[in-house]
Length: 67
Image (cartoon, rainbow, N blue to C red; front, side, top):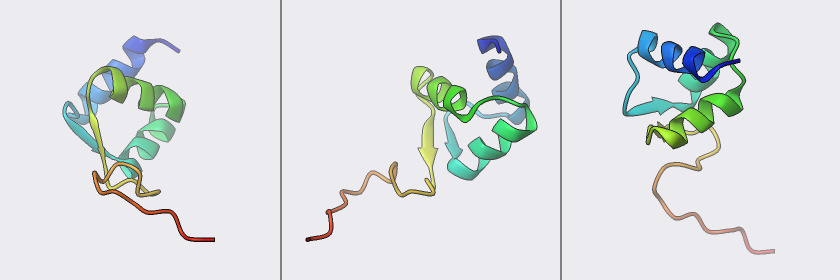
């Protein structure tokens, strides 16, 4: 797997500044790119993850539940 393949996938999808978590997973399956490579590409190219399925990238501070 090359970074060029990942770059090409992002270009084909027209993604340059932000991506939803669901779209990242969709691209992973569509282009046979491991989701970790999608995430790494986003980190390196400052592509913001929006609508994270885990609520991780919302910019809001989450509080841990009290035990």
